Structure formats: structure tokens, C-alpha cells
Image (cartoon, rainbow, N blue to C red):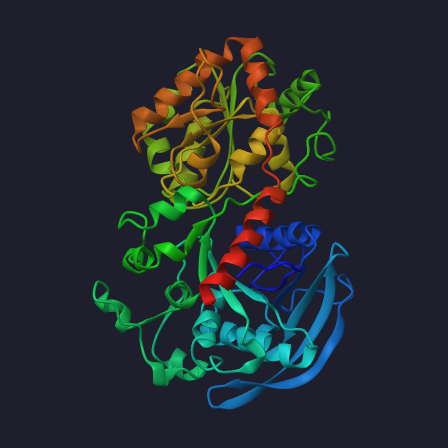
Length: 487
């Protein structure tokens, strides 16, 4: 099925910047639709209207008066608020005080019910909007029942006779696993559990992410490498049998970054703005970072930066084993992040043992994030699993050369630098091994000594395009593919 007209796309997600954010999902949902809209398509977003979203701040207006939503054999009312994302993309918000007027976004005992209601209300609102999408694009476990419904209770609904579903998972680590009661609430208990011969335990729980993968017309994840990795038991989080079965429907599309927000030429957080043609100014940001970190100010001293969650997934198990050896080298190290308590304690001890070499900020700080990207010579991401990763892209945008593990989106965006040929754009840790990590850092330090070549590498990276524009074109192609697969 070839589409020769603008597509109508409804995006369902639990969060979206600038309205509410707890992680990378919000950044994707806040950026990708704008890039798709720029290609001429009618794309709209729907999300819950959480209590922390201020109606006045975001100019929310009522789009639909309260209407009944089927829930657990009864109905519950929802109303729909409306605003705009950057004056280009309509955003609908499902409003219901019982489910969403709370202090936090997640981690409530009734989360399954809350997001079932959100999804069902999002579909039922379409009956009242005089607007039916060609594509319903669902994100993560919170929306995993929508493709399931489209194959069951909405299967013969003429309103959706030509609507296909695309399901995107951002990480298999968060699957939304609940009990049988969820099927009753969702109105699909007569269809029962999913059975798969290689996954007997899937017939004993309701795995919402697994259902999204199983029933969607097309499935995507956030990098080409991760789309291959999840087919294996090592990365598949017990869903690899279903993913292998659906591999012809599975696609990897790399996330992008917001080039307006992440721009060293305009960032308000930097003491000196710069671009690829004015890299001399960058050293002022390095000196400013050293001052803020209480490290000796020396523009020639190699400085490694990290902004990360402190967890095994992010490679801190390896870093903990080798960091003493790294800090015996002639360099400085600045890290910003929070996470597991034992890594907090480890890093504080490191900072005390190496006060002139290491600085640790156990917090989240948006301004300092920009400063580290703009001031560090190298940016370290030794992740064990990294479905996409945006830190390495932002680092390259700011002229910080990445040192990364060859996994997921890191492998798709960073290739080993070869001095002889000038190919590659960073330093790659091939194995999840502490000495492989150490060796990659040593390689980077050796190349850093050649200032002219290092400058050329920085400039090369800053000229690369990791904006959402390329990803948006791939998503449009995926939408067209989903319509073909639906038939």
C-alpha cells in the first residue's frame, strides 16, 4: 500500500516534554512529532493530564466535555484538554481526577488501571473528534494494550477499518507485568493469556509490553543495533522468542536529539558559545568546568566527563574495578549523576582520594550537563546495555569525543577512530571487560596528544547530523510499511 497523501498519526505516550518528563521517552515524544509535522503530516499526541501539569502555564483548553469510557464492565468519565506543542502539533490530554490528580506520575498500585483508562479514553475520543488516524503510534508498556484491542474488541469497528498500529519500545527492561485481573479491567479476559511454546510463564502473567510487540502491525525500537540485540537471550529480557517470531515486523530507528536545545553556539549555560568553525572558544568552557569542579585549571590537561545514571547497566560495575587505575593516568575526571547507593559511596571515596583529579556531583543539574559536554575533552559511556543513548550524540555535537561500549545505539553512532585513515569518530570498548575499558581510555589519551588531529576529530563530530529530521523520515517510511503489513 503506497500512501500518496499526508498521513494522519496519533501518538500515545505516558509523558511528553515540556509538559512532564521522567526519562528519555518524554524527549522522544516531545521532539519526533515536530519533525514529522515538518514533513507535512498531520500528527497529534495524546497523554494523561497529570495533576502537576498546570493548565494556565500550558494554555490548556477543553476539547471534549466528559464522555463515558468502558472500564471493567462499567464506564468511567473522561474529558479531553487540548494545547499545542511548539505551535505546530496538537496535544490532547486525558483528564480524570481519580486517576491522574496525584503528586507523581508512576509507582502507584493501580498503575495498570490508570494507563488502561488513558488508552481506552484516547481511542474513544476519536469517535467525537471527526478525525481518524491512519496510524496509532504507541510507546512503551503503558500503551501496550492498544494493538491488542485493535485485534480484538475494535477488530470489526468500521471507524478503524484502515488504521494500523506501530508499537515502539524504548527499553525491554520495563515491561508492565500484572495479573489476570488486568484483562478483566481491559475487557479482553475472554481472549485470555498469550501462549508461546518457548515462554510458558507468559501464560501466567499479563505482560503489557509483550502484548504490544505481539499484536502491533509494526514494531520499532530506538536503534538498529538494539533491534538485533533483543533477538538474543542476553538482551531479550525473556521476550526474545516473540521478537524472533516477529522479526519481519521489527525495525530499528535511531533516536535523534533536539538541535535547538543542544547547541553550543546558543546555549545560555556556557561562558563562551562556539561552533565547529570557532573551536578556540571552547577552552574557556573547559576552564570554567575545572573551576566549578575545584580542579586545577589547565586547558591542556585531558578531561573525561560523564553524565549518567549510576547503575550496572551503565557500566559502573566495570568502572568501579578500574577507576583507580584510570586516575593514576595524567587526566581529570568529572561525573554528574545519581543512582545506586553503593556507587554514590564509591565515587565519594574516589573524590576524596584524588581531590586534584576527580570531581563528583551526585545530583541532576541541567546546566551542569551542558557545561560537562562543552568542557570535557572526552565523554565516557561504558554501558552494558544502551538501547539508543543520546549522551554520545550530544557530546559529539559539543565537540567532546566519545569513549563508548559497542552496544545498542552506541555502536550505531560511534566507530573506532583510525589515525592512519582518519575514519571513525571515537574510541570503542568492544568487550564488557574492565581492561578493554582501560585500554580504550589509554588510546584516547594517546590521540589527544596530537592537538591538530584531535581538533579535526572534534570538528568532524560536530558536523555530523543526529537531528530528528533523518529519524522522522524513517518513521514515515515505517508508518507506510505498517499500513502494508496490515493489508
